[in-house]
Image (tube, rainbow, N blue to C red):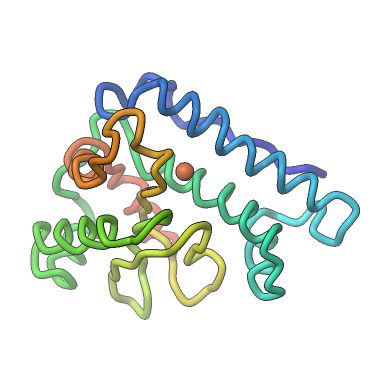
Length: 199
Ligand code: FE
């Protein structure tokens, strides 16, 4: 059974004016769809066909199968990214994650600085992450399709896509402006809290 492009958790214009419907038409409608299509082509007739997505990510990572890894991981990463944002999101968190951020980063501003730095210093394409590792919150960054979902040592809580296709139509080359907008207006802390509760 082939994997399918999951529905966006909001309308394509719901993140405007911060992220435009034009960006989501391309980023979700073209890029995310292409990863789904390419994964299904590569998986057809192999023992990857019919695997749950996260198992395909872990199997292809452990087998060093670049084509299947890049496409399965990018399907997973993008679905996680859409849920990491919501209309009217951003700003300081509430709930369990708020106290853990204070404990592990000193303050919300300490977290913001670490997350923004991870996104800004990821050279080329990649992702910034907030993960739970050994009971502690950690900010990380990954290159290209690489993802903490490929291994079980960390539980992903939140991600931000820093591939140029995520921001170029709205922010051109100004990645730091996109990152600030993500943190101040888009982060879905309920999603992060739900992932923390399920860890
Ligand atoms: Fe992307």
